[in-house]
Amino acid sequence: MIQVAELTKSYGETRAIEGITFTARPGRVTALLGPNGAGKTTTLRILLGLSQPDAGTATIGGWQYRALGDPTRTVGALLEWDTFHPSRSGRVHLRALAAITGLAECRVDAVLDLVELGGVADRRVRTYSQGMRRRLGLAAALLGDPVVFVADEPQGGLDPQGMRWLRELLRQLADDGRTVLVSSHLLAEVARVADDVVIVDRGRVVDRGPLAELVGTDEPGARLEELFLERTKGLAGS
Amino acid sequence: MRIARATLYELWRTPSAWVVAALATLYPLVVIGLLLGLLDETWDAANVRSLLASASSVGMMMVLFGVVQAAGEYRHRTIVPLLLAEPRRTPAVVGRLAGYAVAGAVVGLVAAALSILLTYGWLAASGSAVGLRAGPLVAVIAGATAYAALGTVLGGGLGGLARNQVAAVIAVFAYMNLDPPLAQAFPAYGRFGATALGVAMSGGLPEAGGPGQRLLPWPAATAIWAGAALALAGAAILATRRRELP
Image 1 (spheres, each protein chain N blue to C red):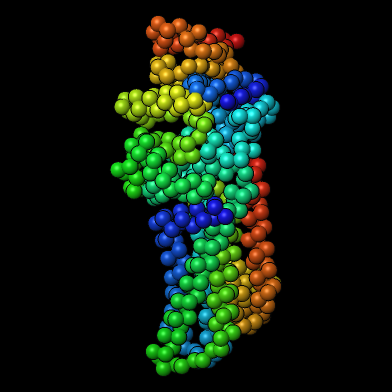
Image 2: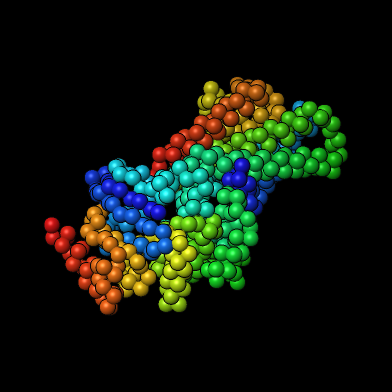
């Protein structure tokens, strides 16, 4: 379970997030929604120990990320679409990560098959398309077969087939009992896979709850868009 | 230990790392080849010993290697998956630097061995059979290896601090070119410069420092070079521990 409580962070004079509070539960896909600059990425970076909060806590299974004994087997994270050395192959990238974390090499082949990159795994990353890099990032995130999956805008760069594949993957991860937290602003896509939503704007949570309760089950994509625009517009005027 | 091994695996499978390592290995060979070809010297044991100490020039190139690798972590954002896999930042950076040190030692060892082979091969071909006792040869190999290993750590620390790969590479190049004239202009500085420390560590004779200055004894030179490497490594660790990764 992911628990974020009263998370606050400023960069200089700019308040990036203020009092962000939500929970992402096992077996459910939780979508962190918000317009650009709302504080989604800042929240995820703090959750993953890449940034320090000014106040509040963000924990995974009750532990801060930096205190996790075996982070790769606990949390799979996809934050940026291009965190690879361009002259190394996808397989080398994954093997190095497996070596760092003490994972068996067979996991490399398993995740390459899972993200359907097996055929290009020995090509240098600089020859990959954006969608292929996104899949490689997903492979890295899933390398440790984690119980928690966190992704920042995972749909970016994916074609329609890739979007459908990702949707099914997220659903499968949640159905396996894992905790899935994804940030996005692709509302129609989110509505097709999310169980719970947290809407943030200008660093604050403006609404949260089960998707079905918030927008019903009739045309959830359109209803979610309406809700999103209403909630974010309201704060913009304050 | 796992991170050091993974770092070596990554370097092994990174073409650009091979290019820089090859240039670092070739550099002392070119220097020694030019000295052998251009200097009209009588190649006695003392001169050969000074010549072989030029093998230490691999170390400055390995500073560059360390800078390229460590700053490249930020340029290519590979620092993110590293710190996600090992969120405790001190072991993460120490592991990286340990991997760089081993790579530097291997390149230094190869460069020193090739320098000896080139020198003796050249002299034998030109009919100047020069005998050198084992001690000075061991000094060349051990000194150049240690100098290159520590130089790679120093470069890794510098790259981790600077993060801007281009700026860090330019700074090291500038220093490499400024060090010899600075040493000549300011004798008090000369024996403490990176080049002189490398020659001293690699068995260069005290008078090889040039007119008016003597090289430091090799233990002192090693202590200073190791101190510089550890200081920069420590600074990089502290900076990484405090650093936000936006």
